[in-house]
Image (cartoon, rainbow, N blue to C red; front, side, top):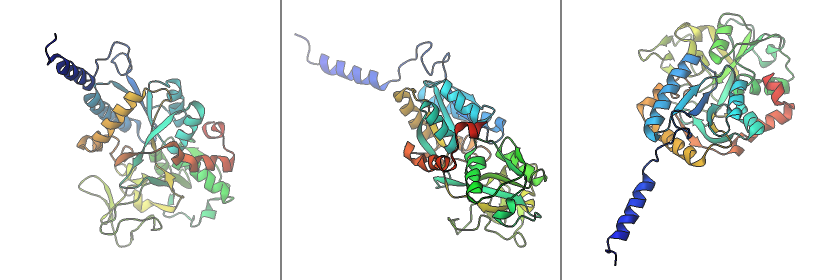
Length: 340
């Protein structure tokens, strides 16, 4: 007869083996020879994304034992193409419109969405020079328009929908390559107006709310400045929209560039996975990201205002992006219209 303690010991060993991470065989997804591909859209400076992305990759590696490789494709279209080309090994931080296109093209699946300082939405900002003679939405007719990329939700797709709905036909267009470059194009007079992302400012004592002015300050009273923390302020109000991203080369950007208006709210950017990405690894990575968002390292990565400025992320399902699909349907936009 077997000793009575054998069965409990065997059960304990089995439980321990389940709890311990399994060593990856050569070639398994997440191994050194087959790292998980992490894609970021080039909405801000590529070097900033690459550096911050590597911080994230290292944190995920330490938490999961998996290996990751960071990529910043040259365009939003290239990001979607890359994820669809790696359906079982890719994850990507892509905006709403890019997600809708990727989901339609190859079944890319959203897992979580950005949270920025408590907001699960953001906006497009229509920007012009402060000395511009553009004062109303209708004044944009016939004017030169700078936008980041035809796949940018806030920079191109939402403004395209709104301009067409308003019957406004712009003049020449400038595909600037990123939100920073759009601000620079307006600042330097290369374009009459631009469209970029808008995140609400931090207003001490009176948090910004929907319906408030996009610029809740008075430049005749409050001075724009770079604070000791390196961030852009007007008085005590911290600026978090795309203008802040060129503050180092153009510290007077707020003095020179104003916000004409904001768009309707837009669902936040996504963390999405290739359609055949292993469910077990997906859950493991999500748990690690939620934990990483609570650390100081997050602010050196995707949480940096010079990167994507995510305060954190929260679960979301595909239906959250139906408003973006509806915009495509209203305008009759196809993937080719956006990416070509």
